[in-house]
Amino acid sequence: MSEPAAPKDSTKAYENVNFLHSGDARVIRILSEYLEPQQRFRRNGINRWVVFFGSARIPAGDSPRANDPSSKLAKLSRYYDDARELAKRLSEWAGTLSRREKFVVCSGAGPGIMEAANRGAQDAGAKSVGLNISLPFEQGSNPYVTPELDVEFHYFFMRKFWFVSHAIALVIFPGGFGTLDELFELLTLLQTRKIRERIAVIIYGREYWDSVMNLEAMAEWGTISRDDLNLFEYADTPDEAFAIFQRRFHEYSERQRDTSRS
Image 1 (spheres, helix red, strand yellow):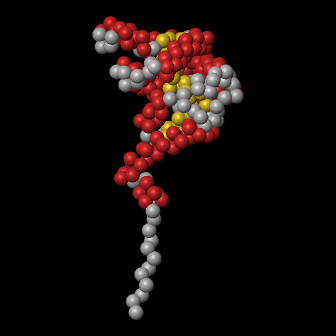
Image 2 (image 1 turned 120 degrees about the horizontal axis):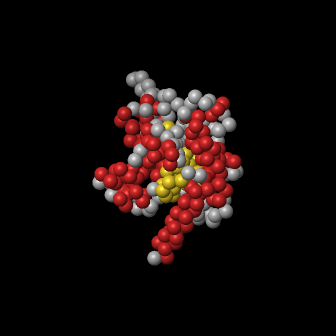
Image 3 (image 1 turned 60 degrees about the vertical axis):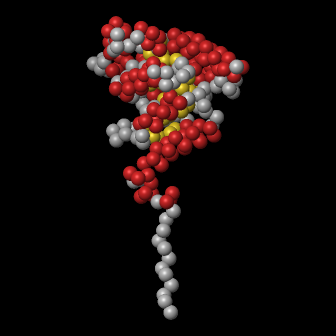
């Protein structure tokens, strides 16, 4: 009589960790970074946000780093305080809107300007989103992101997708390569009309940005059109940025109502 066959040592494919972490399963991991955040945001009723971009290196105005007279970066600390105040005001105002019109503050979940945005929302008693990215040389999410809305991504392009997908406005504070990357990618999407709805783009801190880039020169040279300069507006105070956002928000809401009536 033959010996019974030994039990098979098998694992379901969706439970096979080695497979899921392999190159062959990359498309599954990418899809997970779409579906899992989508489920999370739907569960929390989040479908619109204002995104804050800016340097992770800018210190808070009340931190020791902000009081170093030899540091040029310390001079940017006022932008941390401005981002915190603006996020607080936006979050407070969002709390007065109808359920259909509500929005939250969203950031890249890191320190600096991102922390200021989430902190301002917390000051207002509101939830905020953090779209973090796993990097070998930077810390995790700041402590002010709402825990259930703290999402960590592996793929930069999926994180970029989520930033734009629910955005009704972007506020671009002083920053480095990452901030410029997000700014120019969004301006390109608006310029080429890959985003059909006009998102409000507020470039904050003209003194800094005028010393870093000259978009007016691009129009003068003809590499962009003069109309492309209307894709964004400048602000230098929380009051100015808040006023721009409210105006653009009401324009956006009116277009939405017109669409629903037609």
